[in-house]
Image (cartoon, rainbow, N blue to C red; front, side, top):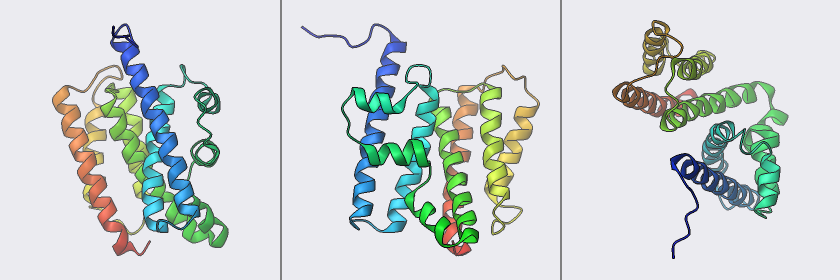
Length: 209
């Protein structure tokens, strides 16, 4: 006899989010240990850590009413992931960014902004995936990306990401706060964000960051 974990679609999504949160915390713990043991390079660590932090922030925000305490969640499921909790909840940035902060403030500012841009891109794309399609939900996320991109002097004024974001922000500004993107609009926005993110990442080596 099958035992159902959920009674409706809402409960099913909740448990799926629980599972994803559990996986993110576990993956972060393994990543932290691998970095400490020099099993991966700093560049590989930072790239993956930024992604995990961004995914975590989106999920934690979505589940804030259900899971008010990530520490309690980890304790309940006996996760023993102190390094991950420190990275995701306490610090919020990769260890490499923290190390650069101690070494050189100016270099850290650039690195932290790059991390901020990356997290903003991923947060926006994750939010679309979670069907957060109302204008008053999407507009702030796009504004955050636009603002963080503007802090990076190595990106040209006509950088494709900046242009696409300005177009979408202008489009959303003409809509009502409660209006929602259509499925086609959401799909196009996700595509534009993904291509802009890839262009942004490709520009980093040329910037010498």
